[in-house]
Image (cartoon, rainbow, N blue to C red; front, side, top):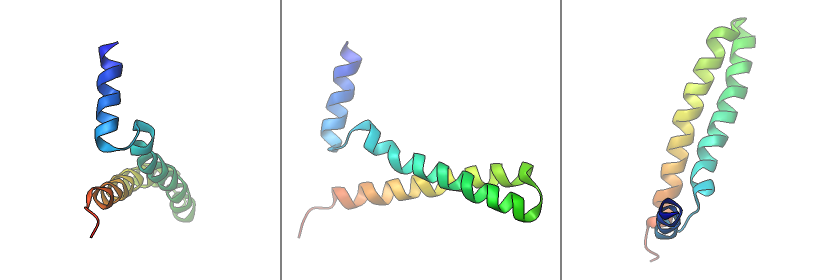
Length: 77
C-alpha cells in the first residue's frame, strides 16, 4: 500500500502520470520497429533491421521524452 502512495506522490511532483512519462518512449519504440522493418525489407535483411530499428526507437523516444520534460519544467516568462 505504501508503494502506491509513493508513486502518486512522485507523479504529483512531476505533474505527470506514469503513463504520460512512458508514452514518448513507447511511441519511439513503435516507430523504431516500423522503420526497422522497412530498413530490413529494403536491405533484404530483417534480422539486422529490427534490432537497429528498436535501438533507434528507444534512443529517439528517450530524447523526445527528455525534451518534453524540460519544456514543462521551464518557468513561464
